[in-house]
Image 1 (cartoon, helix red, strand yellow):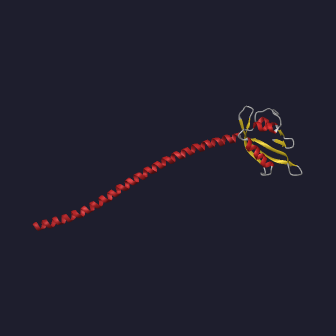
Image 2 (cartoon, one colour):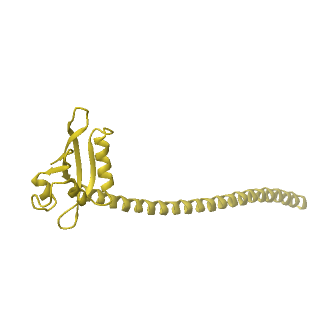
Image 3 (cartoon, one colour):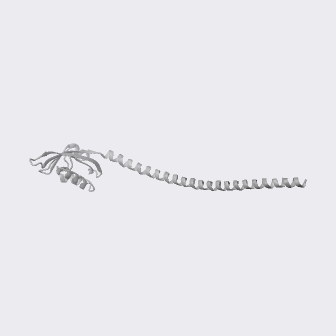
Length: 181
């Protein structure tokens, strides 16, 4: 849990806030700048612009995922959520309270799922390529078979024509044989 006093710019962190990232309780000062120093450089803008949007009333609740520097130098994935809990008479925010939740396990699973997704996409791409190759082969064989069938049909028509011609010749031979007899 964190509690940001917007008048003094001081932030109170509960003991678990420190220990979650491997720090001793109260190891660093209760200042917003101390928090900022520990937010991953690629995430600072996202965290503080989201907070500003909430403080200015553009969004109802502060909610952002970011990396936080652990004492051992590694990064902890955090889901930060918060809400303005106190305002002055003019509606200006005075107090902003929230939580940070360790979502590293979730992020690791998301990364693993992402790797699996990429592997599956590669498998699908490979199988699609092989299927397309087989489809092309089947189309080629189908075209060859169609040509063979066309040739067979042409040969069959010629054979039928020759059979008719042979039958006519046989009839003429029979007539000739009858006449000779």
